[in-house]
Image (cartoon, rainbow, N blue to C red):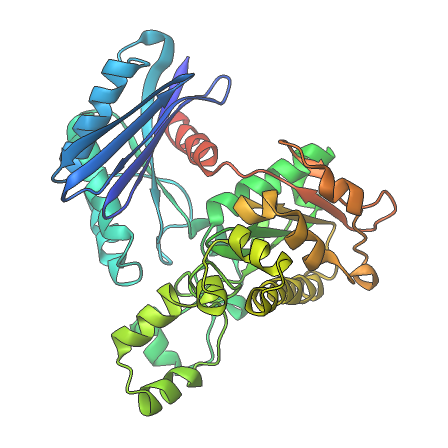
Length: 398
């Protein structure tokens, strides 16, 4: 039974998941945190067995060693031929305009990922360190990079081009790239399969609503526009990110509040969004406060849902009408009030949601629109790790 090890390596953490590709079931998963610090933690889960321990993780090489030890101690063994490990798939956040599909990793690919670090300084360097560490830990095993940006490389030029000085933009690679592509791809295909229709026939809007949030317009299985841009900052309101904002706000704050570039970067990325508006960054806490009558929380919830609604309307127009709208990720899959607020009043766009279906819950894909709704509205659990594993297997299988 072939299996794929999916690795998501950040600057200070390493997540992993071992997936049996015959059943597409997760055999084991784990998280190693606080890489580079003296008080690291390692968690590993295999079936009903869980382990958690304090460890010292000086670097990514040590993290990979701890990961291998966890498989040896808590299972399943990576040497077990019943779970033949055939490749490792790496999540890489930014592939720029260079990578438009999953790519077998070699020395040149690593150089290119490192070169793109100026576009994703918090993510790509950690990915390169994780790749190098796993290459040493698993010598000879194929490694595949799966890029968050790759799915959006089908966007037309008019979608990804910013209206600034053309030569300046070309020189510094300033354009819309988009993110969450692995999730948008997985969800759009899962929705098509659920409906029993070829993905090539469908016009879809996928709402990836979590601590990071984005919307994607998908025509025939291809991304034609998305709400994130050069970085994951623009678009929807997020846990700590502002989403769309007038760029002149930054000039105003620099002049009037004396804020530096670093101050403004921190403001928009870590002190804005739900946290900046309400004082709490978790959507569940915002909803709880709103239900208790907290005015800032009520406003925050309204700003969040209004922004999502705005993008639904925009992408409906762009697509010439949508066949399917899918909610996914933490908020999209689990928040009944958010889904209701987003969908309320969209009947003229052919979107009629069923309040009882929306509130019913469930663990799999489910319909929350009425039977008469021209646009089908779904809740689709995402599985980015499985998507990475599928793409990795596809690369090594030719």
